[in-house]
Length: 155
Length: 155
DNA sequence: TTACGTGCAAATAATTTGCAGTCCC
DNA sequence: GGGACTGCAAATTATTTGCACGTAA
Image (cartoon, each protein chain N blue to C red):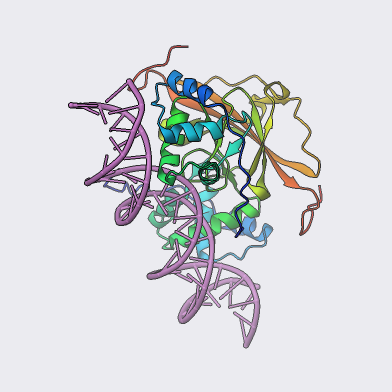
């Protein structure tokens, strides 16, 4: 889509903070993980797809391979440092804040927006089927642009 | 995973019903769409991935191509006849009941289970960002097996 | 040292598309 | 008859994996 890469350097989390996050998750502080962590944890309310993160880290001056980004995202996810958000676009997005909150999803742009945890309250959560336990409740509020190019559906 | 294809013929919705559903959506009643519709609309609480549906239709005796399944699912979705459900597995699942309800998602099996609409109530839905309107609210309650093979996480 | 990580390129998986031929209205 | 639909195979896109090499503990 875009030929020119905007070389805005993304904000970076302090190295020592990332180190201790990794240590807490029993993950070796390799150069690549540190670089990914510095970008990921700079803003606790970010949503990234693997490709975006890859681009940001490379722009930040640390070369690494895309495969490593995928692998590391999976590890961070398994460690509970970040969270995968399911959308209906083909690609996964990762949420840098693991806390309790939900999302708006702008369909046309494949973009996520945080909804603070207390804003939505779920009453009467159903009991899980026998033999299962609830590990998470994800609420996705799907949005579309008003008066989007095209036609508007009558209510 | 499974080498033998169990040739259980799936239940089929009546042809006339599928015809009128298609007519209502302004879609031509072609042989392939009818066959897909008969399988899809036989049970209003089914969840299928494209490949599963493809297999079921072929088993029901109507040959068609996988590409047509994908294309048709997209068309049915756009027409509001079915609904795509986002999960974190790579593949999309389609829900044959378009009505208001939510889902349990068994992560280990990539399987969806309906939660009736009134079972979950959402209070205080947040206002959408300016210029956007809410088109749907999807709640996904993620489940994992209790005492799954492996280890259990302490609470 | 030594198991754990990483890069690369190739493999997979799910889905979409181009185009020639077929079918419904 | 003519545009809508389908099949096929090839293209795309997102992600994973195998294996030789590098690096933190």
